[in-house]
View 1 (tube, one colour):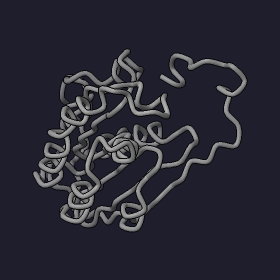
View 2 (cartoon, one colour):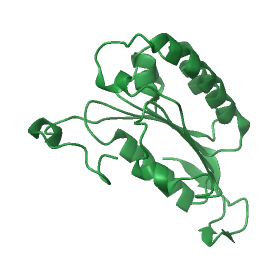
View 3 (tube, helix red, strand yellow):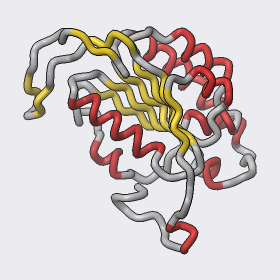
Length: 203
């Protein structure tokens, strides 16, 4: 369990939002949420909200998500919370729903290159207590992001940073480095019954 010691700052209110004292994290962890079942991104959003409610500073980056505005995007504009940086990376949704690599994967790979550099800088910056990279596992699996760079980010992260990776097909080398790995297993899914994605539940 993450060890928290004495608070760093005083409580305050910003734009009507109560901001608790920022805790000093003594020991962070590396978490992975993977598997074929539903709930990986949902779990990471829950972590984000819990961290913000505890006064932590959070960087949340979404990769390979739909182009339309999902519920969390509507809730998290730039001014949603002063302690949150929420980024939606340009993406190709076809990479998530197709088993084949589209012809434009090379273009997408080039677009994604700066994202790993940016993520690495965010981890090293000391500005954030928790950093969540949603769908990064799948990006690595499909060859959009380099595994070597992801391993470097994990290995070089400050010990007080909580790092969270989500997405299917988590690489074994990342799993070996993780402090916590949760695999979402699909037992049943309403998609298999022909029920389509629903607003407020799937997006």
